[in-house]
Length: 250
Image 1 (tube, rainbow, N blue to C red):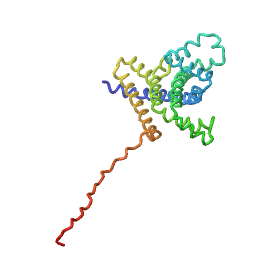
Image 2 (cartoon, helix red, strand yellow):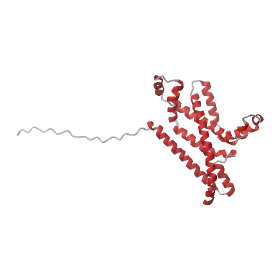
Image 3 (cartoon, one colour):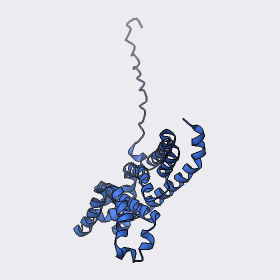
Image 4 (cartoon, rainbow, N blue to C red):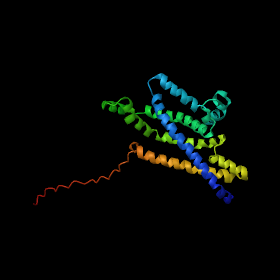
């Protein structure tokens, strides 16, 4: 193990971490904003609306993220109409294509997670809210969505961690993330353990940091699902006082 090489490469890995985290955060924020209304549409009673969202999530979840990224970055560039359109300013940018691919893919998964949480809402909560005069947008904003988002935290944490791991493919479209730095260090020094070992350690720390954050969120917002067990106090039994027997001598 050449520790000096690892120390010399740390500034490169720091830049890779920054790229990975920025891409992860902006993709998560945009996918969350898109997934909330799509989840509401997914559980809509209107079949045209719900089936349209289902088709989107079905296609995006049924194809690999790497293929989607290549289609956006390499595939669309083959069409002259795309290259001559105003969208080409964005589509020729690797950052934009990576963000768009991650956002669309994560939106599909997050939509189904939130939709499942909405469907699992207790009917009694809905009836209680309607008894107070809540309906439509107000019902979703104040009752259904907050309740569903809390229940979806465990599944959503898996999506966040999975997306963080998926950012490793951003290096295939020239973004210098953690994996790309590891590949460059390996290409320059031909040392697998030092180059990819550091990358693995970084991903390990990021993963368990995210898991820890979501554990705290679950403890905060899902504590009503895990009521504290009340310790049963030992019961003290007292024997009744013995009644004195009548003594004929007194």
